[in-house]
Amino acid sequence: MPDNDNNWYVLKVRPRHEKTIAERLSNDYEIYLPLIKKYNKWSDRVKCVETPLFSGYLFIKTSIKEKYYILENQGVSSFIQFANKPAIIRDQEIKAIQLLLEQPSTLEISDGYAFSKGEKIQITRGVFAGVEGRVTNIKNRSRLYIVIEQLGKIVSVEIDTESIEKK
Image 1 (cartoon, helix red, strand yellow):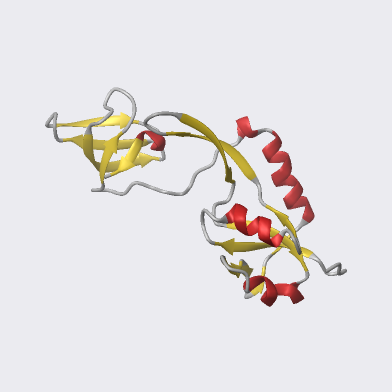
Image 2 (spheres, rainbow, N blue to C red):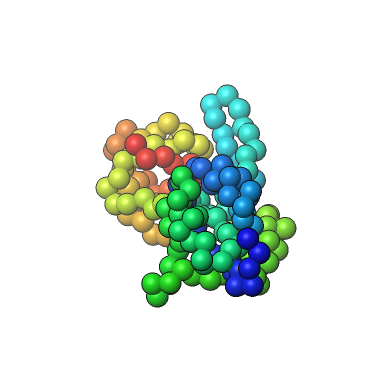
């Protein structure tokens, strides 16, 4: 596979299968799957798991001539494109991601999920844990205005998204 025109590209892959696909492709290609450690809380335990920094994506260094062979792999959807051509990621950008991951305490990841007006939610942590409500207004990423019907009042709650789940 060595080729002079090898570049880094971004593959869109099946979410939650990034590690499996990366392992399979790494037999034939240079793959980079940036992982972060995340603490998941279940009702009976807290566990540290490694999850992809970019869910549903991984980086591959290859010649674009290999594009169709790569797309034949199960779980690989497409190459991310810019101006109808596969987007090339520079080596410096890959190195920047690697440097970023060396200081994970300064890294903040947002999955892009936003609560919408009128959405039913349940608070999972804090003083109002277990209380259900409805989002009436969103001031910013962490400030939601929630109607808590059990109290019959509108309560302004500043809360992180990990403490709320969609009902």
